[in-house]
Length: 255
Image 1 (cartoon, helix red, strand yellow):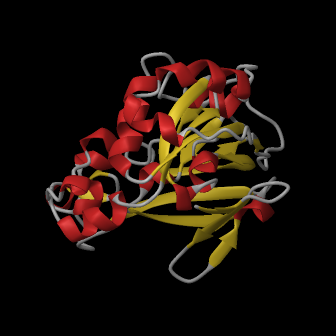
Image 2 (cartoon, rainbow, N blue to C red):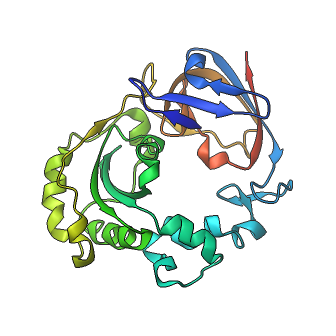
Image 3 (cartoon, rainbow, N blue to C red):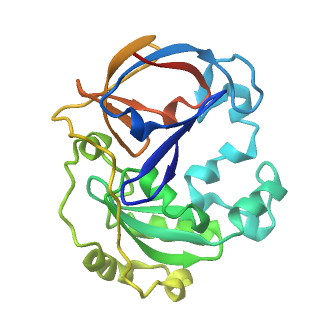
């Protein structure tokens, strides 16, 4: 889902024929039907393996190589190719932000500067603060590795969706963690303490959540009560992770 960070986050879903503002569907009954697969790369109706790609494409395409999930494995700054050096130079050799976010507990993460605040919204962060701005992905990766010795790099999606979020002072945590920056990235520390608060379109948060598995449940219908991160939240506590179903063909009906 595409997003816009306004007074309340606006969510948009592009289908084969329409662009839907999902905020307008709150309190409406939505039916979700699983229709099959379509790999984001080859377009074939092959079972999706990971990140919207079939097995073969996942192990061939540069956009889903290991350095994407593990920035510290980036090598374009050394002129070393992983799968496609031109692609990797474009993606890796640009400004990156290492940040702290509050989505369940405080977590550290990495994103391209151009993806701020989109990345924070996609993770369902209630608040986020930039930590360092570095010139390439490798430096962001080694910073994240150093910091996650002292703070988590994971979000509890269940707590995030129940809005069971720790009450933490991100500015104080940032200042405390500064001492753990690697020597290579200390000069890139961001002195300004700019905390972004994010407000999601949620009517009410569920007490319990369970994830919709389209491959086990080919059909689901429920009343949409909220959207947070990349999840649709339904009245019965069922949640649908839109991002995790990239490459799946799905029919949405408003009933």
